[in-house]
Length: 364
Image: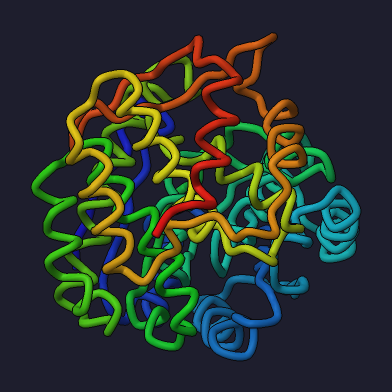
């Protein structure tokens, strides 16, 4: 079992990564002061519920926790204000109070949604992240929680840190291959922004990661979480450094919005976005390998590196105008300067971005 700490003073919390942790959840909840006197609410989705909900609920009840559950439809469409309202009603019906906790059991969508329920219910109660996807190694760490608006992703949200992240690697073994590939996008991203050797390692070990080999997977997720924890510890509320975690996300979020949330998986959209960012890096004088290595590693992980022809460039640009990083005729982009190093450019011309989006359709 590997353990990391997100250092945020009084709000510091651990990340536990290992096999069989779901069966030990009760002990971890007790260790970290989750109250047995107040009900818990486990929020999960339809895909995860049949695999892991009964196990987690039973383990917690055996430890004398009072447990209520809520199952939402799988997919990005559940990150909505209407679903938030339904879950708040569920929390009220279950008798949750200020000492209760929300438990997010699932991938990034569930973590974002459940975390925002916790952040807004009674002006903020505790929550615990129990990620069950590779993608969630990124989203479960750092306390960014949100729901979507039809015009923009994650535009309604908060910073609300969990009490802990309990990451049972055994839950990943049932992931569909497409979700595995999508999750690896954020793993690769952490190498591209922070650790050149790890970025190359991801390319060299892509087959092992795609096969969900426990040793390779455990190492990769620990490295990815380490990068995320280091960045968040230095900049919790994305005032400066934390923005580097958005590599590929400006274009990627726009692609998700245009495709209709769920039609293009998050990691797939971010992969295409990172190719766009690499192309932008070349415009600012980065070496050619920034583009070639980025493309090679993502392709080895089975991720898309080309924008599908049917995507409308005007619609993508319009979606980016609703992004939190847009201002007047320029945009904020995370731009690679080398493999493992990025800069935040705050005055990227919109015309450059449009040209790059058009070029993404021409990728081989």
